[in-house]
Image 1 (cartoon, rainbow, N blue to C red):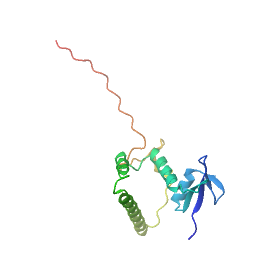
Image 2: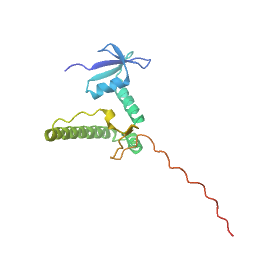
Image 3: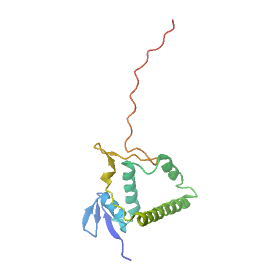
Image 4: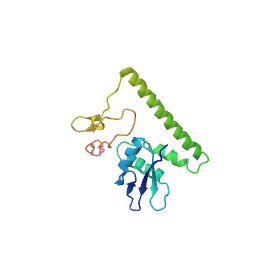
Length: 163
């Protein structure tokens, strides 16, 4: 098996891809993840493995923009398991659950391909409605992409006076 691609992280927070001999961005590291490329991020001075920290940084950026995947309650519950006797079990449970979900999705896609043939790849830009570029609403109960404007307040009423 080939060794993982090494990315060096320098004190100035820049990431250097040793395979391409170029500096790369977090977006390019995300592309490596999406492409199932095996890589490791190392501190340029100490050689410490920083891969988890970089992956968490990518997740933080994804959660901060657009539609978050994790609710506040879910994040709070995850935090509550740190230091808990069940911390190790919770981590492995989440990992197995995501793997099972991923495998089910792959099986579903394979079955759909068997039934309907090769499905066309739709670019992300196609998932917008109309000229305004409004995204398709998440019908599965997620968060709206942007907070909705509050309804205009009604004109204040005059207090009633007794006669």
